[in-house]
Length: 280
Image 1: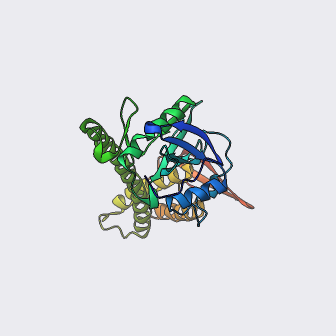
Image 2: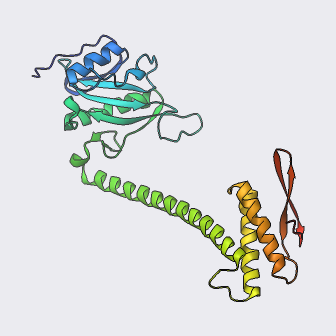
Image 3: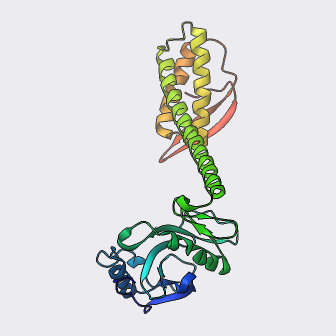
């Protein structure tokens, strides 16, 4: 028996039965949230946490859910983010909810019993037509819908969770690498263009080598400008200088399309022209 005072069911909705006479309720009113904070010894009592979630009428929405034992005393507070407010990607016609936080009394880690009761909440959302996301660090969900605390889960679930984490980390690392590579290429492109423009590139000894490098840099910068991935004002001025430098190096006309920049009051227009056309 707990010596904590039950928060009571007033101001709650959507009761869901759990094991051993326990049950879930969604906290609807600010008063219910405050009473929950007193019972659980958390910031719902005094700091106003979660007040913005009060008043939602629909079960499939962002909200706070309280897990209580048969005597009405709360043992787990769960925050759920509803459709359009979570990190899940919905398929057409699909709605989703995501469990984002779950803490026991005084913000303690959830007990094994509490985490096992998550399956009832998950099942209720699924029955209501929603897909449900549960963070791996909070609970592992088996094929039968049972929920386990990560350190107490069967080994096959632990292995599957480890494989999923690894795949997510690899995907994140790949995305980060791709971003850094793109940023590095843009930086190298601009640095290389300036060096070629000044005739200072350490690997370019002859005018022919300088011209070849400058032609390549011009082409890449044109593509960057055309795609909108480079600041227009800086890119235009740099290109004009590069065009003039290219002419100064002599040699045959550049056999590649060029951007012709036409300045109009308050606007900058760009148009692809044919091979060999340079407008400095």
